[in-house]
Every structure is written in C-alpha cells, then in structure tokens.
Length: 389
Image 1 (cartoon, rainbow, N blue to C red):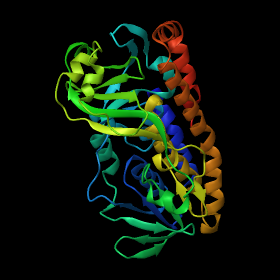
Image 2: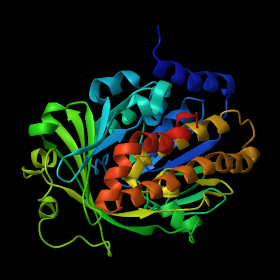
Image 3: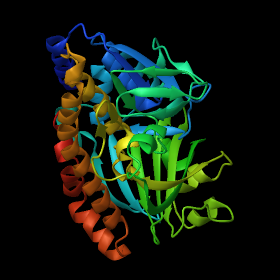
C-alpha cells in the first residue's frame, strides 16, 4: 500500500506523463542551488534540453541545515528522490513552541498541520544539494555577466549564447535580476540571524524528532531542528535596526534562554551570520527570462517556506513548459507561470508577516495566544499550502 506522501507525489508524476513532449528548445538555468537543480531535473525529465551553470567552482553548502515542511518533501518525492532523501534526512514528527525559559506554550504533531500531504524532514544543506546534484550535469565556475530579455547571455569568459529560455535561480543577489529586472530590489526585514549545525545535549538530545522554537524579548528567537546522529540545526535571530552583525559574542544574546537552548549553544561550533531580506511583488517574467526561488521572492524564514517555494517553482515551471512544441509560445507560458505562482507566494509572505508580529507580542499576550490558539494559528498559516501548487 502506498503512503499518503506517495499518493500525493503520484499527482506530480501523472501530470508529467500527461504533458511529456519532445521539446528541444535550449534552456539555460543560472544557479545550481536548490531552485536551479530542481528546475534542471524537472525540465530534463520532460525532455527539455537544459544547461545549468554555476558561478562558484564547487557546490555551495552555506546555511548549514534545512527544515523541509511537507509541501517541500512532496515535491522532492515527485522528482523521484524519496529514496535518497529518506536515507539522509531526519523525520520531524512533533513541533513545540516554548518561551525563553523553556516552558512549553504549544505542542502538536506535525501531521495535525499537514494531514495527508505527508511527513516533514530535516537535512543538512550539503546532503540535500548532493541528492539534487546526483546525475545532473552542471558547469561549475561559469559566471553570467549580462542577460537580455530575448535570452541572449554573455558569460564572464567572453562567450555569448542565445537561449529560448533563461531561468534565473541565482539567489537573492541574482545577477540576472539586476540585469533584466533592475527595479526589483531586496528589502531589509529588520532581522539578523546565525545558523549552525552542532552536537546536542539535554532536552534536545532527548527529543530527536521534535522541532522546537523558543521566543524571547526584543525579537529574539531560537529554533532547534534535530538532524539525527546527535546533531541539530540551530537558527537564532534577533531584531536589528541595521544589517550589520552586532559586536561581541552572539551566544551572549541568548544567555538567559533555558533548555533546549542550553544544550545546543554550549559548544563552539561556528555559525554563519546573515541579515534577512525580502523581495516582494511578482515582477518575475520578462520575454524569455523568468526568476524562480530566492531570486524572485526571497522571504522571511518564519514559515520555513523559502526552499519549499523554490522547489514548487521548479516543478510548476516544468509542468507548464512540458507541452511546448513551439519556442514562440514560451513568453505566454511564462505569464501563466507568474499568474499561477503569485497567489501562493503572496499567501506565504502574508503569513510570514503575521507570524513575525505574533513573535514580537508582549510576553503575556504571546503566552496566552500560543497556549490557547497555537495549533489553530499554525494550521491557518499552512492551510493553502496543503493544496497542490
């Protein structure tokens, strides 16, 4: 008997089979991160001639860890990656929200949020990249210099080529977006964060399948996501007036946090610092160029939907282009892509902002909200994401 996750994934597979064609137009995917590798896989699976380029000389693994909500896992399963994913990822069955002292404010099963969509997982970014990269050809060390809306691309080595479609998956600092969509710029969200993977002790070690968020004053929050093998992905953030990293030890900012923070911050594992930015709107399509993933709609990590939206972008784009037998139809299909994805992205952005406001409520109001309506609020945050993209 197939699991609910496998049934949902079958929807993606059956759609792919119905729309398979012999499209041999040249497609360039710029960027070999999550969005780019997923797009390359999805498009190649429909018979499209895809070329993937990446400016770095090797796969990038910044970010340390990833929490994959069920809608992200659904897409990966639909791409045929459920086997290697299950070998590398940790199942997340429960979620807790605690105050800074460690008192539980809300405690619920992940499937109470996601239902039949399937399971939630946690994985290191390096492992997910390895899974997506396996069997995929990428030209590493190939930087794009400029892109024209008609699909003409010049590379840093002086070469020039024209493509029927350019898919920009080159992240929040996208070269393609700056060239083709110069008015679209990231906006600082007033938050900075640190990410690390570390060994765990105490409460975190005793709950290997529980995702835990801790909320403190002044916008301080800390997320602990088990990765298996006695490790956890830790995400810590604070509100900030500037995007610069504060002076001193960032761990000191969370010194008054109780368990499970104590068990994951006591070590000296290095942390990656980042300022958080957002790209709003849906100006993603121009003639033969389309933005996907963070290049199009970077957002707050509050909903853990950055990677999920990128994966969904990839499969929806491939689905719409799967039946193309005439390159002249591509610009119109890209408009259909934008119209289809825009409502879902707007929903996630709105829920991110709502959750960030709730996180910054006064301690007593926040305590009452999460204790009496925590699960209902989280279910509402994710309701539309249970639907297929």
